[in-house]
Length: 94
Image (cartoon, rainbow, N blue to C red; front, side, top):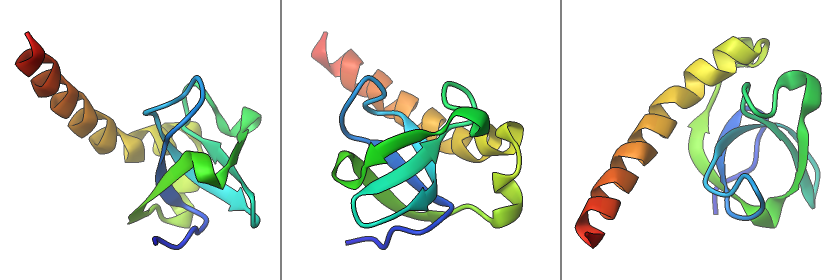
């Protein structure tokens, strides 16, 4: 199991944001405060249960957690990779 840390990139497994990549800003034993810099900016973080998150091995530096723009930039490669994977999956279903 991957350790939950501040700055860790995670993907939502449940809820209206299912499949979205987010960054963990704070956490306790049960919940994490997450944001993505766009739908959930730093000014309006989401409190999400840890069981509804899949944490990756990627940790974003503290410097990149200071603005919504830098958070979006850090999550960009994850979002693009997921879009490519979904594109191929959807194409195979046709």
